[in-house]
Length: 151
Image 1: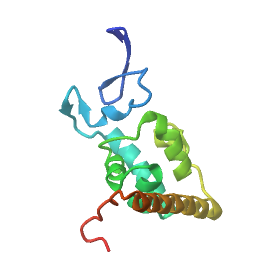
Image 2: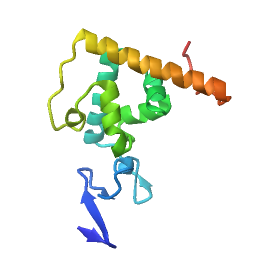
Image 3: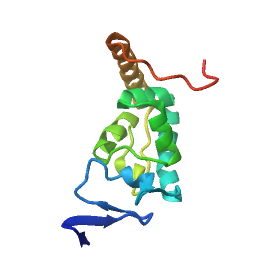
């Protein structure tokens, strides 16, 4: 469909986004037409796949957020299905979590990981998170606050 010289795609939840906007094509998740929309089962399913893979690797929400260049809150939004990483960053997220993008989007089966792959992925995420913490300390930026009750 073409509207105002922009190509528009219909998304399963009913939202419409520009197909040319590869940077933010999943950013429609929280707001459609300026109004907050309800989280759908499709959104929750993608979030659940992110959470399952993160938990399989034994990685904290905070470490995944820092390794991805964001915060723990960003990952929590993804896991609840309230928001998604930018479309252009899905390959990077899937590489960090060692998951197939088709599986993330519900279009393919999950890939079995060996113990070695799990350990390697966990160490890669944890070292990237440690590097982000060190960089924040050296640059004087504040570290993200711990969740209430976190040690």
